[in-house]
Length: 269
Ligand SMILES: Nc1ncnc2c1ncn2[C@@H]1O[C@H](COP(=O)(O)OP(=O)(O)OP(=O)(O)O)[C@@H](O)[C@H]1O
Ligand SMILES: [Mg+2]
Image (cartoon, rainbow, N blue to C red; front, side, top):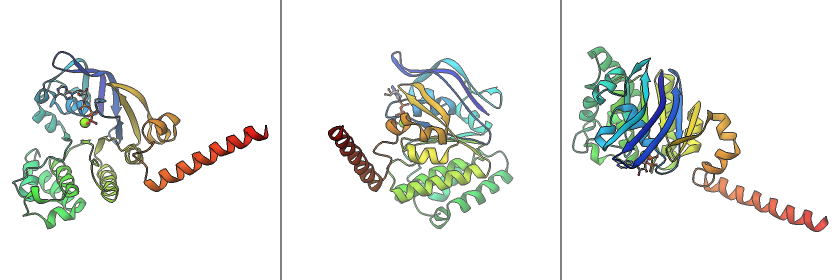
C-alpha cells in the first residue's frame, strides 16, 4: 500500500537525515519504526505526510507511493485526501479549543458527511473519555488524554494509513498499554499503521513488521516477532529502558548467576 523507495532527505544543505531508505507497508499491516534519538524516524513520517517543507527539509532522492501513485510531491492536505494522516510527535492539540472543536477540525478532511459521522462514532467508541470531556479545553486534559485526542482527531478524517510519531512518549506504563490496545483496535478496524517508537517492547508487540533506523539508514528489518527475538534488537533496543524494573532486576540476577557460574567453572577446570 505504501512504498518508500530509495528515499534520501536533507535539512538545509548539510544535514543528511535519511539515506536511501526502502520500506513497505501492507494495506492490513502495522509497521514499527524503531531507532534512537536523531535516527530519522520523524523525518520519515514527515516525508510520507508531505510536511518536510514545513521543517525546511527536502527529498533529494527516491520516491514515495501510496496505492501505486506518487505522493512525494503533493501538498500535505492532498496527502490527507488520499487517506494518509499523521499524528506528529508531542501530542499536538489545539490547547484553547474544546475537545469537541479539536475533533471537528480533524473531520474537515473527511470527504462526505456520512464518512464524518462514521468517524465520529468510531472515535467515541475508541475513546469514551473524549466524549465525557467534549466541552473541556484540550489544554486542560492529561498527557494521556491529549495523546488520545491527537489520535482521535487524525481518525476523524477516515485515514487508510495512520502515521503515529512516538505516541507512548512520556506516558505512564498503564497508559502505554492503553495506547497499544487502541492501535491494535484501529488496525483491526482496517486502518494500516506506521508506528514510530523508541519503546521497542511496545512497538514490537503491536506491529507485524519492523524496521530499525540508525543515522538515517535502515539497519535492520523483518517480521516483528523475529526482530523481537534477535540478539541484536535485544541488545540495542530492548536492553534497559524498555523493560520493567522487575524484569531488569531479574536480568541482573540472571547475569550475576551466569558470571559466578563461569567463575566456578574456571576454578573447577
Ligand atoms: N528541522 C530540522 N532542521 C535541521 N535538522 C533537523 C531538523 N529536524 C531534524 N533534524 C536532524 O535530522 C536528523 C533526524 O532527525 P529526526 O527528528 O528525524 O530523528 P528522530 O529519529 O525522530 O529522533 P527523536 O527520537 O529524537 O525524535 C537529526 O540529525 C536531526 O538533528
Ligand atoms: Mg522524532
